[in-house]
Structures are given as C-alpha cells and as structure tokens.
Image (cartoon, rainbow, N blue to C red; front, side, top):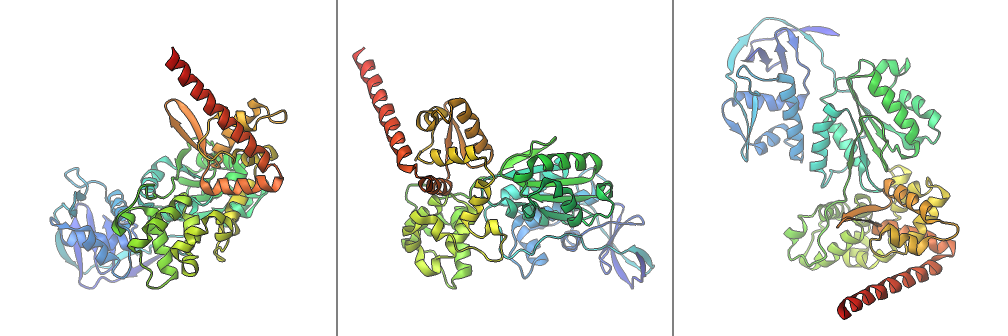
Length: 492
C-alpha cells in the first residue's frame, strides 16, 4: 500500500542516478524506491557520508551492530546486497570497493542537497520468514556459510550433506538468515522430519509456505525454500524439487540431507567436522583456541558455567574430548553440558561410554537432535535390514578398511561379496561411513561415535565376539602374509 510522507528539510545524498533521503531512510532510483533492509541502509549511509575515505570493517560493525557480537560475514553479506542493488557506477566500477586489510570505500562523487518536495513512497515491509530465533552463535562455519550465501542465488539448488550431528540444519538456518534481505518474497524453512509418508510432502510444503492455490502460487515468487531433513523422502523430494525449479524461475532451494537428492542441477556441499587439535601435544591456550571444535566446547561451557576458562592444565583433556567426538558439533554441545558436573578431566574419563554421557539432550530441540543416540537412531531406523547388519559387523574394524578387508571379515553364505560392495557404498552415501582416497586405494572409516553406536547394536545381536574373532584372524593372516612377502623379497 502507498502512503504520502512529507520530507521536512530532508538531507539528500545524490550519487549516480540515486537520491538517498536520510530522514526517510529511502533510496530512489529516479522515481522508483529501492528495496533495502535497515542494516544495509545504515552501512550505505556511513560509506556515502565518508565517500572517498576508507571505513574499517570494525568501525562499520560497531556502528551498525553497537550492542551485538556479530561475525564479519554479516557485514560482507550486506555489502554484497548493496552492490547487487546499486549495480556499477558511472565509471563502470562498483560504488563500494574493498580495500584489502583496511575496509571499504564509497568511490563515487556524492552531492549533498536539501529537499522539501513530498515523495510518494511504497511502504517496504520487513522480509517474510518462519525462521526460528537463534539462541546461540554459529561457531567454525564462516567459510562454508559464506560460500553457500554467494553461490545459492546463482546456482538456485544446493544440498548440504553429512552425518548425524554435523550441523547441517545449523548451517542452513544461518545461510537463510543472511539471505533474508536478498529474497523479496521471503525465506521459508520446511522441516520434513515431521512427516514419514511421501504423499504428504507437497501438502506439508503448501501449508508451511501458505500456498492457497498449490505450486502455481510460487511461479513468480522471488523466495528461498529450505528443505530440511530430506534423507527419508529422497525420491519424492527429487520430484518436487525438479517441478519447483522448472515452474518457478526465481525460486532457490537449499536442502539438507544425509545423502544426495540426485535431482537435476543439484550442487552438493559435504559438511566437514569442526577442526580438532592434532594428536600431538598443544602447548598453549591460544593455540588450542585456534581449532573450531575447541572454540565451540569452550563457548558452550561458558554458557553453562559462569566464569569457565580454559587453562593450561586442561589442554590434554580438551584435545582428547574433541578428537574422540570427531569434531561433531552436536556431540560437543552435549558434552559441554556435562562440564559443570564432571569437569573436563571427568568428562574425558567418561568418553568410553559416550552414549550414556551424551544422553542429556536439549529439551527444546526436535527429538532427533535432543541427544546423540537419537540422531543416530534417526539414520539407523531408516536403513534396510541388510544395511543394518553390515553396519553392525563393520564396526569391528578399528581403523580405516578397504572393500577387500570388509569382504574378508564379514562376508559369508548369507552376505555375498557382490552384495556387500553395494551395501558398503550405500552406507557411505548415507554419511554413515567416511570415504578416504590415497595411493589409488579407496578406504572407509567410521566416526568414533558411529562406530560405538554400531558396536552396541552388534553386541545386542549376540554376534560381537564371533566377528571380533574373524577380524583378529583376518588381521593376523594379513600380517603374516606381509611378513612372508618381505622374507621372500630378502631371499631373492
């Protein structure tokens, strides 16, 4: 709806074809108002008022977010949005340039005027969205978030993949938050874990996006849809994504899944764990805090225990905790919740029983994120019976293994080698096994937490000791075969 507001002796900053009415917080391109968010306008005002000078990133952040602690990526996203909205200046260069190691500068000439003419203004509504309020900062994901923020508006369809607890939903929500100002018709989160029947997917999507006339209502929308937890509805998700991208050319889709959707035009981004300290010693608190897994552990511990500080004598325990938990954000957050009761040394000592230790979840989280076991149950319960058996038996491997080793240890009359190969590859696609390439050989490896979970399942099945013996015989046979080859080479 349009409304008429008087500009009373308003200061107007003019550059190129634009008029920036400061009192109204309005930018006109001729007679057309530009849609910009409040933060972007504040950044632009500082830069334009200091045209020709370099404004540091710290100064911009301090001005725009005076009472908040924010990441530099927030600033970069708004700068990118401003550049897109303004286009290039009269000289063919962007109006805003980055000065490496210093900050940003507005390089176009600026004229200061006074205005007293009424201007017809189209009211700019706040971006529409259904994103939950963020309660904690995102740690260690700036690079990945920035990459998705830059690529998604161009590529239109990206899928974040990774194992349980790696933080796919956290990253997707952060990307969505940072792109709120980019999508004029909103950013919408659609949690697919709430449904199990593929036939319900489209109705669930329509209700979340408040579509009255089905997918046709999206045809002209400039919006972002986040499809969270697609792994159990892959085929139906693939069909819906294909249809939406074809019928709505201004729509972008960000999916999260434990395996690829394999839809047309899909760009995959596999989330790595947070960085963990090396097995070798770390010598200072500052060195330890250079690893994002340690940063998250300390941040969450401080939130639980006032006055918590990482000390020199804690470094060995912190290194072991982060490594044993594979740098998984969910596992680290749950472990940090126990520090006030156990202290770091006590927490380290209890890691052998990690599922009992990490069972005290977040009551406000969805069930699959309330504790580590629930997150793995979500994946395990959606495996076929054969995949469940193979996952259990492979857990006897303490190190990375090849397909040949897997066949040598767990295949049999009921599990033929040809079937085993396809199942192992399927488990890797589902992010339950990690894949390593080296010297032309493919190896598979468990995360420590996944292996502990699978071993517990194997023990409950009654076959743990039998497959441990098969593993020991295979390793012994392989070892003596290798020794024999060395001896033969020496004799020759």
